[in-house]
Image: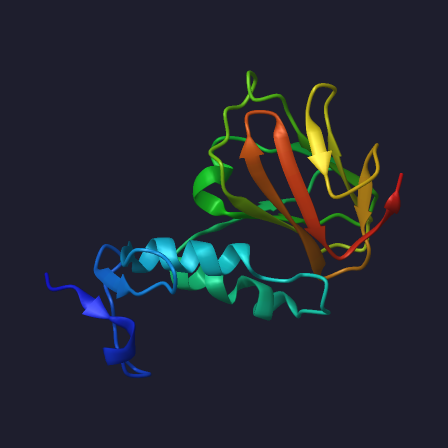
Length: 170
């Protein structure tokens, strides 16, 4: 399989997930990246602070071939199975809680996950004691509106960053 340079790609160019792209980075060494890793990097850049439709937010995940984890209960703790899903949809008419556990309990890979509120019940995102959730002043935080969400990024064993359409600290 030949390495392709991004400027050589047309709008309708099809790439395999493992096919290498040659990326020239200003002030850095040339890099080679797979389509799948490039799409993961783009997903990390999705700004959920804008009012995005449900389909708009999931487009990058769909390109990656990831499956959504649809949750209908009132409590859910991120699980290793979510490493492949990439996005978790909380769909309940009642208030519900999404929990981030200790790394020792669930060793999630360092990457970005999307937590979406599909139901009318407010989704609150919280971290257990010992887990730092940067991006808020403390406690937990609620997703602000139905069909919006938050991006949670694991940066180290017990350190996460949250951004997106989130309200005040609970």
